[in-house]
Image 1: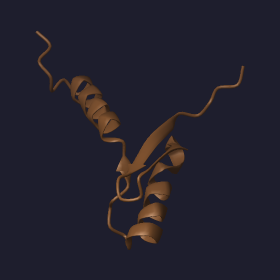
Image 2 (image 1 turned 90 degrees about the vertical axis):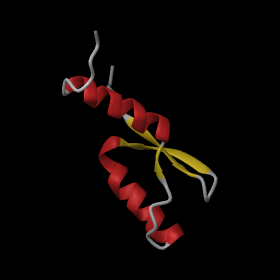
Image 3 (image 1 turned 45 degrees about the vertical axis):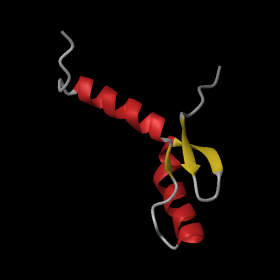
Image 4 (image 1 turned 30 degrees about the horizontal axis):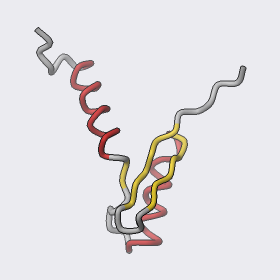
Length: 68
């Protein structure tokens, strides 16, 4: 069974679009969209819910969350 590369959801509220891109293409995809569609303004972003989940995981991993 072939493993699938993880994808990350990108949302753009201005364009009302959502797409998923492979993790290793995330930075380029965001930059490309924002350059072409929004004159370089950082409008498109990683889905905010995913960003919050990642921040929580990193904080736990770094021991910044008291889990008592």
